[in-house]
Image (tube, rainbow, N blue to C red; front, top):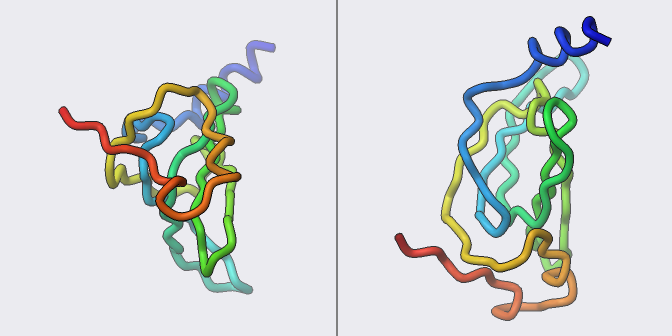
Length: 114
């Protein structure tokens, strides 16, 4: 069990910025196509965070060409190259699954003003 913990500690990233539910973020994801690699950005609203430690994941939702797209990213994955916070959201829920049923302006999250 200690060997698993040691491996887990080595793979934990330390340079991930703080982001919460409702924030709009841009994730740079490493995409492999054959023998080539490139970084593709995915920008959207964080609707959920699950797990802890190495197994922690977050779900990002955006609307692309009128279709809702959700992706789940492991925070400590080597394929997640960068995470940038675009804007902070003001929400009162831990999971924003209700945004799936909203369309247009009703699906917006208010911005947090500091």
